[in-house]
Image 1 (tube, one colour):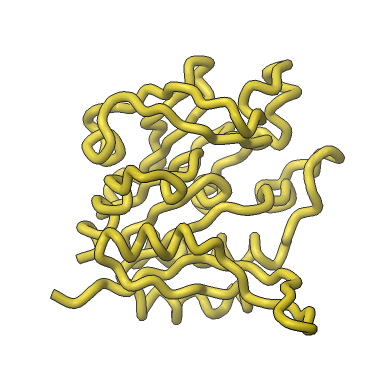
Image 2 (cartoon, rainbow, N blue to C red; image 1 turned 180 degrees about the horizontal axis):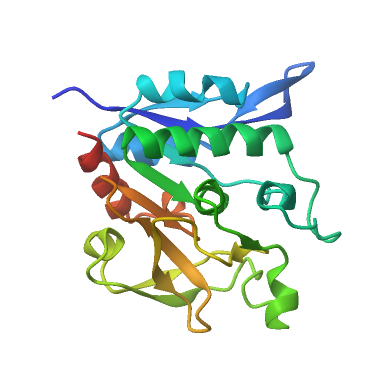
Length: 228
């Protein structure tokens, strides 16, 4: 059986090799490795222009919306928090267009960390731009702080990983208002949304944490199975 072609969103960043420093298309290798372990064929998608979204999607069997810098508040008509990093607006525009094209085409989507926020905003949802202020706590921004989340057992996410999971998911943003067709399917103890799903879609799953970084590849397995 041939491996389904899976697009992974990438970004432009300065990179060094030898004596050269040039802008490069970058993606952490953990995404491609997780896709490969699950039986997919990964390809990187540079954020060139939103107009390429439909062309990308026509050639793909699935889309990974990868993590990265927080989504700019302008994307959901809010005011940018001064404590948030400078948004990568070109990436926001391209990935929002990709997410919408993938939803229209009904190809499987796995949206990770920032990618979950992109999927939510693409569907008309909003984000909490600076979560520590809302919670009056840094517990969701602690890079070393693992915590247990509850997962809906009837969801695609729950069927892939079970009803509970131990995750490490440092983030300054969070889902606020869910976008059209999206349901919350995983929560932290304080009810911050940690997983979402697009109803009526073949496989449209977003998670707040980084499943590509661990040894448990079950979520990628389920994603690639849907892409077949």
